[in-house]
Length: 184
Image 1 (tube, rainbow, N blue to C red):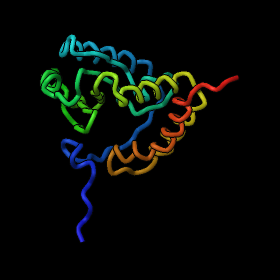
Image 2: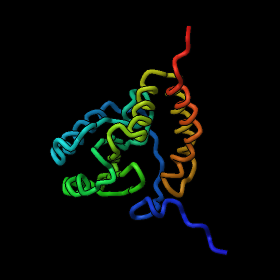
Image 3: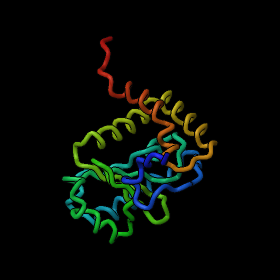
Image 4: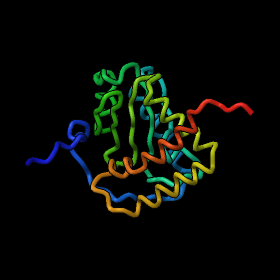
């Protein structure tokens, strides 16, 4: 009996990677690094940039994180890679993930993940809602931080497995972040 195919085989360019998950305290310099990358992306794409946001844990003051800057770049159509990938590669990024509604490029140093999606997409909305919620809800931010620190102590075959292990807490937080306001 053969092993079932890895669902990431068709998504990850270059295959799975084993990396240590290191969580560090929030560093205010992460915002500066984002601004540096923002300038680089705008220089590469100009008016094809329809949205550019610092997302992920490094964008939330007080939240411990892997020291990897996550950026959301919104374009007209993420499936039209010719409209953005060649110029981002020329600017020094490397295409790493190709999945429906999402591409991810990163720096060769692996310290910046550039997530590309279609402007107005659910992918874009979810990441901005999650970031904004954690910025304004310290209890959920602290809970998420504790889960990340606990999971970082485990040995992971791939960073994606670590991300998947956070999915229950993320879903729980998102259920509150997207819930309609309650009447008082």
